[in-house]
Image 1 (cartoon, chains in turn blue, purple):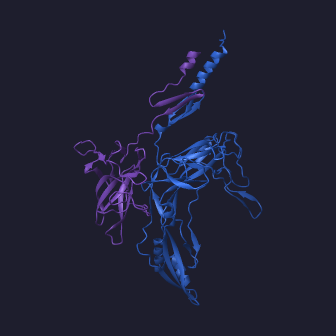
Image 2: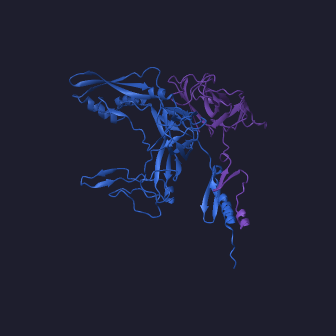
Image 3: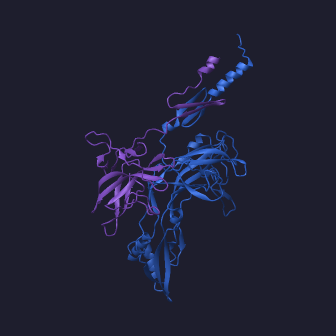
Length: 357
Length: 192
């Protein structure tokens, strides 16, 4: 059997030919490297690019001090709320000077060049959600947030199971780390607040007046723009209440004057064998998980009346038990006092709703 | 061996672009996605006209100057919305909208759906908005018992290029919110 002998120059030429032919995924292409073959798929042709679609890229850049840096950026396909485009906050002098940390200005998703979000506040869904101590002195870890089942197949480390130990059992097949951030849409709107005024105080009785005010400070500050921002973890808005002097009941002390909706969660997955404290860089892969796929409509529950809402007055008497009667009435929708207060509170709640179709 | 190596070379077919580099070949596919042919799909014809695929609001078919978007029963070609120089606001935004005309009364039924190009969906004359947009959502009532729902947004760039962004993808339903007098509309709601 004769062994072919290649001069080194020829060998290098062949090697260069082979290297040149090695396929890498470019725009709209998805490649799966299998043993003995590479499967090519047209990624763009297989999927509908929907509004609010997030795509993430690692970008190397040089900062103002001339130092080379890199960051994960999320680009968002234009989406609309009530037919008007969303905005991102970008540096004041972007795109000429992209340095962050200074003043910003809103840039529409439909602008050219397109703005982007910087993803730099990753949370670790593998870690225990919280830690607490029992009366017996034991430390108890809450279960980790976890991640969609899809990532198990990619070999992502299991999340903390909770209990007395923070870490999941080691699985040699699952050694990748995962981090996540949420992209949230904020829609400004008119807000409302309840005022409780104590009109008269006698020895045993009080007269309360409930009034509603409508606020537009946030709406004006944002000029009505819907904005998107990236957060480590989106927490739905809670009711903003105060313990008012009105029967100790929680009252609307002024809502945030906006509604929010999570658009997507961006997960990034590390190469195998990454450490628990690894930071996402260009060696990680990004996987956006979308919560919204269509353009949105949004409306407040009602339009504020042209004339201020007439305040309602309630006379309560502690000593004679009327307070108790009214408090009980608030829990019993057969009582006219409850109905009156309930109707009033409804008229003073401007929280809005999103809908797609 | 040379033949064997050359036989494995990648060759670009239709819609494929190959960029050879010393360390490998980057494979790219052309095309912005699968074709999704849906109601209200707006296609620009240059920078002064557009065609719109048929769509309905409360099952009332939309028209351009009274002609159905599918051309009508006579089998005529689909009508073209010739808007000339696009009406846009100071940031170059304009909209192609479905403008409904309602019949006032108990049910405010949709009588007519006409496609229009406007600088703002919520102004009576379709001109640019003075001040900030409607803060409470829904579509504002317009004179003549009209209201508009955006189908697509136009962005006129400083270079003169006109970009289009589709807003609405499905046939629509409509309801009106009446004022306490039950005679005038305060908000119009559209959904799919």
